[in-house]
Length: 616
Ligand code: GDP
Image (cartoon, rainbow, N blue to C red; front, top):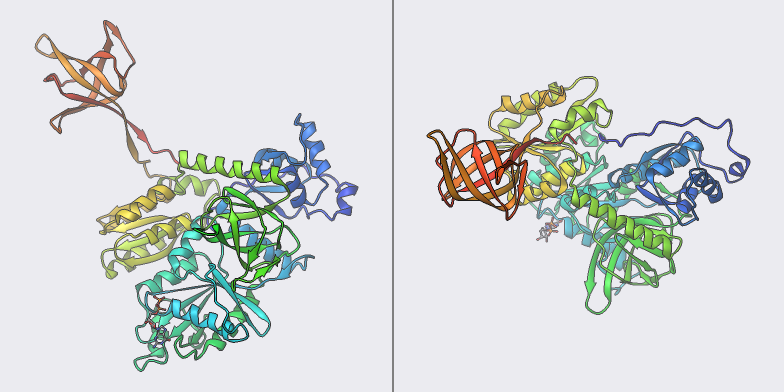
């Protein structure tokens, strides 16, 4: 992943871990400890595998009286970790996906105790009408007919099938939009992406989008060439088209697995499922089933009879009846849970989808859930999640703007500039892409996540958001929905009409030479009530401030009937006879501008400042 949060300096290491720690087999100090913004003493002790009292003592030394449920912020937790010789890293929501997975993989490779293989979680993506839903249904039916005959399947966001005793979990919401929206929220759900391509239609724009979305998430692909029962099916053509997209299947000397299937006749389905297991094996998917459960909300809704319901996917640990779970900004005791066949179950291990009923509130898809020790921890965690959301809402951070790129590279926060490129015509893509790719050096390079002809869509913005990148448009329009999503997600969209300008700005950004964009801040408005002419060359607009404030050190526009008559610096601002720096709403003042003197009663004077866009 291109973007990494700052790593705290490693503190002095103790000569050896204290004795109590040895008994508990503490974490190796070689491991990077990933911490959330806020954690409890109990959870930190759990993570470090040290007795909580060690941490409480450390807090006391800092003058903090704490009990085991005390919530501590990242800085405090990090300094406690420093004491024990651990290097820490701030876990942003987005980083969670990386750390959870890499931790699991590392642990499996090291043969650490407690980690066990877990079923793969599979998402189906592809162009509309190529058979995503039919394939999901056909796979689900294999389960229902094999022993669950008559069982009514419950739509719970995901379901599991078993192949030769090995379960596979399928996410029931197909499509790359849902996949990337989850990722943008920091939830990494999918281990393997199946890209469906209809053999009678071939590779289409959304096929390419789906492939690029999966690649940006570094999720391995399996190609399912569907509808092979159709007379028009042309499997070879699909394979050649895929090769054009640099998706090289095994027959073409590549390493992408392809299966030929028909969702209608079920032909090839057993082979597809086998392929999934093979790819899963290579991925070494693992999770610790013995810890408190955590995972992600797949779907949630309010059932008129049964109240708030959520479909969740357990990603690590095991969920039990009676557990106290925090989901998004709500918490609940698990009184009953159901599997994908609506059967009550008592426990759910890693990669298991379950349905929870009777929640206090409806969480959102993509919300993370976590089992906690007690009500108090649940409350503090809900409060801290609420605070974090409010903070984010108050100050929408620009994930990464072109202007901030240089700083990000210099400080080691970013290595790649991730770009989604949309152009007017197909022919523009290659020259722009190759010019951008030439800009890189040893320290960084431009990574084109997805390039296509067409307008900038919401899906493009989500991809950029999930990959902490930007969207570049060339001679193309930005769809209104995309603009709205970009504003909320803090994604920069830049559009250009000349290739040279696009490439030049990216180059300047990489070299730290791009001027930060200036933005305009409207400070207030005043309405002219009386005009005082002073000699022939000067006029004072006797005005009342009707909005915000009038400011001396600012620019002003004079507006009359929707027309701008002047746009220049404020010359003077007086309150009665005295110079004033600012005059608040409701008050009267005398305004002069640098050169404009033709004020009339009823004119509106708008005060504004220009500010360089903060480099985030
Ligand atoms: P989605 O938009 O990708 O979810 O596609 P659907 O699953 O809704 O399928 C689109 C259409 O293709 C439907 O009319 C399906 O019946 C049909 N279809 C899907 N899979 C197959 C297949 O393997 N063979 C044939 N002949 N038709 C299929």
